[in-house]
Length: 207
Image (cartoon, rainbow, N blue to C red):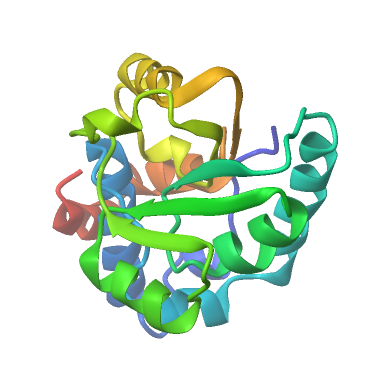
């Protein structure tokens, strides 16, 4: 892992919006530590500012793993943490043509509304639901495939999550999750929070 160093101009406060930057960083880090971090609640902004490399990486890994799965002619899929719906409609469906229906879940109602309006598709049913809280009983052993893209790092109880996925999958079904395992930037933020010239700002995020 790379050393958690950062530009001298940032360290010594030469940024014109130091307080705003520090507040933003502190709040984001605090949210991750509390397990409350969610997708940007402004989905249009999230989609427009997301790097193309993010989508390219998902496509490359999805293509690789999907080719190794066993498929029947008509299958039902679950996309946990679908966010804006962009990846569900424009990445997942094209790579999985045998999916005749996808239930796409997100915990934020405003984001689901955006997905329905912007990335609607006859095969996709967007829903507001947190599978960590509840799932309909009729979903047990309903899904051939379960997908989760950049959502697993929001899960606090991994055992409960994996048990739920297992319960929802049909026998012989597949679960694929792609996402973040380590982000060096978090270590940078943590180090900044202990530095004299920054620590007062990080208190704003209640670290």
